Image 1: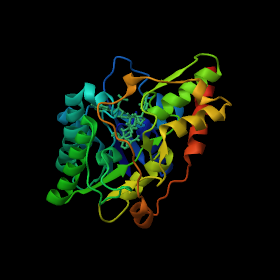
Image 2: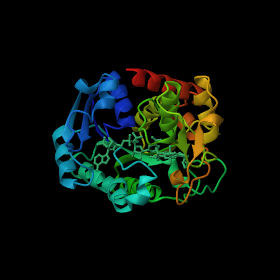
Image 3: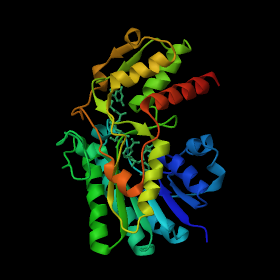
Length: 324
Ligand code: NAP
Ligand code: GDD
């Protein structure tokens, strides 16, 4: 019997890579897609990876509990990956209630649907290193206390603890992956790595002269989404549900990430980057650095792509996209 996986957020970066990975493992893949007036473009990432025709998409919304109950009932999944969220930190100050409803309470909607219709299914929650926020330890592990610094991080913290609570209250096989930043050519254009690689490609091709950024002294632990979706799957293959930090264990400033991207096409970032206070945040997460030793020891997982390799892959993909 083929295994069945249900993925919320299937049209996002991680949803696309996870679908490709699950299909390669022989799964039937189902995904939740929200209604849009631009039907036909929402699956662009799945098309980019060549898997759009191999997944089944069902109409639903994380804010509409009844749609989730119906979808879980119809698809009878063995594994549920809850990736859907309002995922952009900067937007969460502009849409705090929506962020709370979808990124936070939406997790309960999904857990309730699973509890009612597929209590044996294994559940993955997309938790985030943003929950560490104002860091309480230099390297953040599963034991590090949380200190969220944005409405997004507060909502994710709720999603994280409700997942733990449903595991402890109802015996669900529910795991939470505390993933540090992960990127790819399929990253949304508003996130800093993709904004930089797209900007560098535009400058190289003579389509732009400058790139406006906010706090380039912030540090992140960046990995590749292709590597990170494998950790999600590995968590659901364990006998016991648990929580895991997924990270590279290396942290880099936005400035140095930027320098890699400009250098790749032979440009000097100092001639093109303009600091624009419009991109500063009301409260910043200055530095994130993960300790992935538990994921390594228990899941046998390790990041395989360096930041350098990933940024060069992203710049090349943006150059190709813009030339086309
Ligand atoms: P993403 O590219 O922004 O994708 C978000 C997905 O959620 C999209 O498919 C989006 O659908 C969907 N979505 C948003 N609101 C929804 C709603 N109300 N109902 C149903 N679906 C909805 O994010 P990502 O980078 O793939 O991240 C996946 C998950 O991991 C997110 O929960 C994110 O917060 C979390 N996370 C990400 C990172 C990272 O560095 N990438 C790190 C830690 C945790 P549309 O396509 O229609 O917008
Ligand atoms: N987006 C953006 N745009 N960020 C900028 C800019 C800019 O112009 N200039 C500087 N930055 C800084 C931000 O202030 C932040 O410190 C850092 O670059 C990374 O910003 P993002 O790429 O937007 O990601 P994030 O770290 O806020 O959030 C991402 O990672 C989280 C995991 O730690 C998102 O994917 C979240 O969904 C995820 O949970």
